[in-house]
Length: 164
Image (cartoon, rainbow, N blue to C red):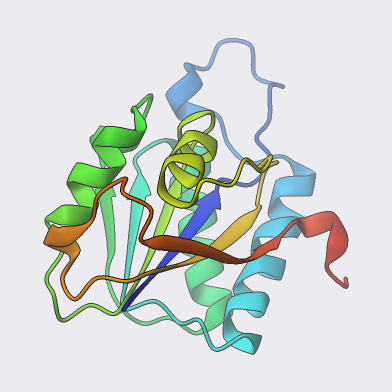
């Protein structure tokens, strides 16, 4: 069995009109919510073996803050392939992960993450910014990952539902 954590990046700022979408930073709410998710990961015993993140500024920052707050000391793999990606692209990236990894945290974007969650589990859930989905998948290796229904949504945490 494998564990997949899907995390939509924390809330980003639209304040800087001249910035490209890829370069938008977190806003005040995003900077507040990202550490809350890191603490949650630590408290729930969901420490990932690897974090994979989009290269977009808001995703990279979310990944870094969550990792630091959770006490994660592993690698954060950045990939352009998660920016404006279809769910299939997420699947392809996950399939290249070594079988030795039991838990992978993916930090990405909507609508892709909502579609990925739905395709994997058959459950349609809204993923507002900084929402974390905990999915278990009945596979032995990441290479076996498909949209065939072997995944189960275990839990979903939205920042507004978490204690300060």
